Amino acid sequence: MSIESLGQLESRLQNLIDKLELSRMEVEDLRSANTRLEEENIQLKQELSAWGERVTTLLGKLDIVTEEEASEHEAVA
Figure 1 (cartoon, one colour):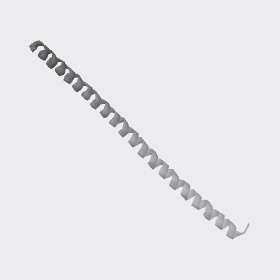
Figure 2 (tube, helix red, strand yellow; figure 1 turned 30 degrees about the horizontal axis):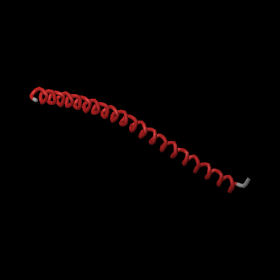
Figure 3 (cartoon, helix red, strand yellow; figure 1 turned 60 degrees about the horizontal axis):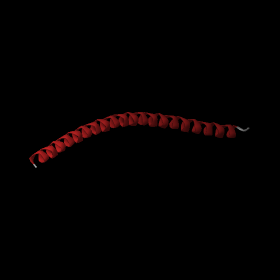
């Protein structure tokens, strides 16, 4: 191998090493973003569940009021 060929090989290897390092940094950034999004997703699911419970409670109260009104109308009639 000539010195020129070794120089080209070294240059290509350095380019590959640089690309690999850049890819590793991108993967780390994506992992961090993924972790953050998973945590946000858990929080949003908890909020959705809490709102669902509140809606169910309110609907239950509405059913009670509706039943009471129906009973009052039957008693009057």
